[in-house]
Length: 549
Image (cartoon, rainbow, N blue to C red; front, side, top):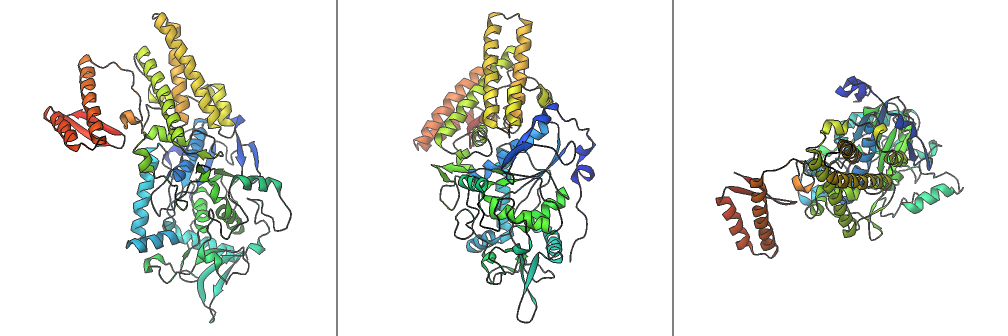
């Protein structure tokens, strides 16, 4: 029943990038990151020189993604991009939880197959990640594809004396297996829950910034797995490793194991998949702050109880709040990604989501989006003006080839300070101000080769810094998004095209106003007139675009 195959090292056996020499920047010597377990910012040293392994808890694909979900994805995308800019080879694993009580219950209510519902919403999450410029993970494992890994891991925990199987009156396994918290003296080390009455002030301070690590009962941020409320547990703190099926669970949501028929508990899947793809110990385990307890505390305990090292460092992104309250579906304040993108460009949404350090609460509001739009206008204006002045843009290869050692020192210092995006963004706009000054000088002295060289150097620095944050307007996905996310490359268009653009834009604006006023007859008339002239109109989330037939 088990799978005894050892986890593969994707850096050495699968990924083509393993053949590429690693050149870590000198700037990496200054990288400091926060660790949830120690409550301290400390110097980062990889377990393997030149390589970084990161596991981030991904989505439970029960329904559509909202801004709170995507904030965590953007936050760790920026962390990953900084490691890449520093020259590290990064293996980035982000899982998909495609089976749990909520998926099963919602699918049943909607008359759906549970796996079909999970796959549908997994694709929605993927679309949201791609639209907002989140790099695809090195590997994205699904929980349902790793049952044998979970079964093996549970068996190791049982063999080591840190779990127990619940049996029926005849001594047969019921399918319920629990982790024996009392047998593991290290339980609570991640969130500083100690098995005594001693108060840990550092933990208390962290708790004031996030969910309570003590309230495992009626806690709206940490709903308890129904199996964890079972009277069969030896201790209230024990948690489910494997669960007997509910009567309402479909037959294809049950797996046979040596300890009975059932399905995995919530926490075991991440321990199994992180070990499968990152091996014995890895550098960073990331996720949202609300996963700190009980999910990550339990995950750390069961991984180590199975005999494997846990992550060397735990990092947690804070919440998106709306009027000071955590954004979530249960609170009714969740904003779906499609609805936000219907009114704002993807670049603007990504900028707003990544505008503060990952550990800071992000207040979501109309003002945040207004500020992000203003940032886009400043960025694109400078890049476009500089491109026109230089007669073209640096290539993407040149932009991505800039090492962290060649970036402005204030940007590097901010990113090395626990990925302080606010400081890094300030450095970008400081450089843009300098670039605008140079452009003014260039207008006065058109023949100045030295000033032109400075403008090009500044433009390259701005785009390289933006690219590190996933925001270079001349990179994908922003280029394909057109005006929704990109900036002009600075090449001169013909007078004929400029005139056509102006005339059609006027018609599109009139059509947009007609649609807004619900005068669909007028809107259709404008579209049909343009079509007769050989112009195709395409309506999208970011507005209407045109092309010649």
